[in-house]
Image (cartoon, rainbow, N blue to C red; front, top):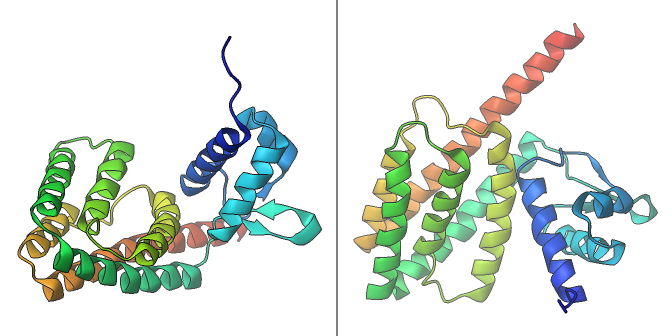
Length: 228
């Protein structure tokens, strides 16, 4: 007889699925997250859903309003740049420590992750979801040798916040050579050049924010035109 999933397993499943759908924009910014509809959508009980929502509140991916329930955080440019600038500070420090502590195994991980990313960046008609998975794997490989548990944890939270903004555009900025940015980042990291690697990473993250900013501004202009 098959065993029922444990409460911890159900809570983790609810957390993973809710987190994914918020980052991907399936639950839109500002949307109310009522427990009952979520239990029906995910076919998971109310208790695991509440636990998942509480975990996501701690990560800033869900807002709690006392007795009024939960909502997806809204989108605004001030928050975008707050997330961006803080991510630069944290990820640059994690990259610095990773380069300083990384050995042969770390270098092999970086090379392998970059190779997988390069294959899809050079292919026509990129699958954005698969590109995103390989892009994330490459960035995680770069900081994998960072020994600070707290830096790694903070970096993960900020990376998820940035991904939520990036998925709003679902495309690169026109004329941007992201493949070249990744190549420069790989080369600087493997060369042990912390200064160059940090500069390349900062520009790389900021260019993503500029691309999202452009999309948000276009959306605001479209709304204004529709209302006029």
